[in-house]
Image 1 (tube, rainbow over the protein chains, first blue to last red):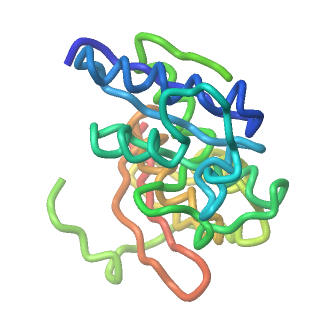
Image 2: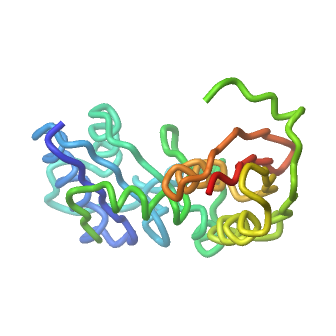
Image 3: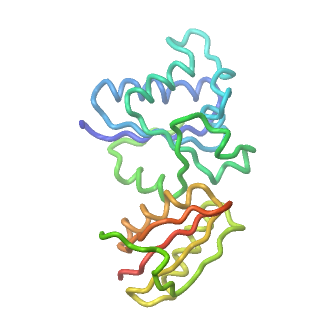
Length: 119
Length: 84
């Protein structure tokens, strides 16, 4: 592996929801280990039937397509349970392949990452 | 770490953090582990789905030993032994 990147996904605004996946795909292509951490409204990206609703015209792929690319490429996806009550979401509402994590998981991943990107 | 029989572990302190969402259970675990002796074990109860992921990583980071988890009805019981 050529390094680790941790991407903080805190928004469902298309302008902020898509770049983590574009950059994450690029990081996988360059053999980096990729982790995406979803919190606050960013949780809507990994909520069932959530990504379909986040549309960015002109983007090379839809958000569900990007999620598939990243998951197939081995990216790890973590949903922040601290924000579940804030966004009104539960563990069962998450798409497959997303695990729950908390503040310790995030901070340790951040410390171990070579790059942390925040959206 | 060898196989640990969680049912036979002597627990020095049970921390009921079921009413607390992340980062509450982590903070309560940190507080509780300071109240038991080195070598003793705490058992943290949490209904937050992240706690069973967070506590092993926290323990590894700060130098305690994560012994395991019992996933129960609506909450998890997580065992950590104080090592320093």
